[in-house]
Length: 179
Image (cartoon, rainbow, N blue to C red; front, side, top):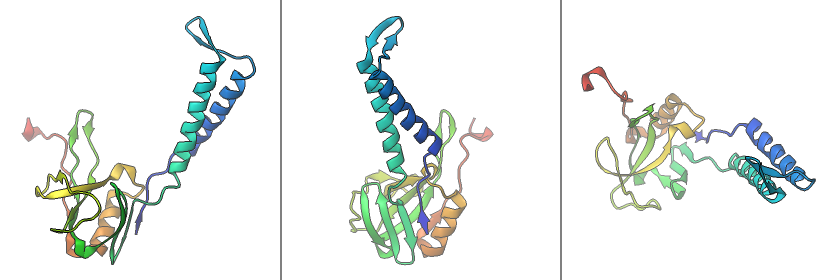
């Protein structure tokens, strides 16, 4: 199963592409940017349009990046967290969804965490100490950046990861007992 990144909204890409082009065209045809009542000229207006246009191009290009995680019976193919290789299941001790961390705005999203087997180099150092069992780990991706729902991710890992997938239930941000 392929876990794909969420897509950028095409409306905003088109809006900023066209807006950037229009702003650059206007700066070359006599329009100027005003800060309060002081005209600062067409150069800053052109730069504003250029930044808008290039930002939209970068957002559009992000839609064509490879999927960060591909799961099958042989292991994981990763293009995330500095890892760009296949990792066989024998090199993985555990994979789990770490419960979301409470934030000031409310509950966050669960993160997919990989615990490499002892002595295995997956391409980056396991510097993160996970909150589930305290072992050195690698945060692969937050579920908010994927198209798949939490249930789809759980089903895919339960199907292919055998006993290596640990499904920790999501923890609510704050309960009445905590107060």
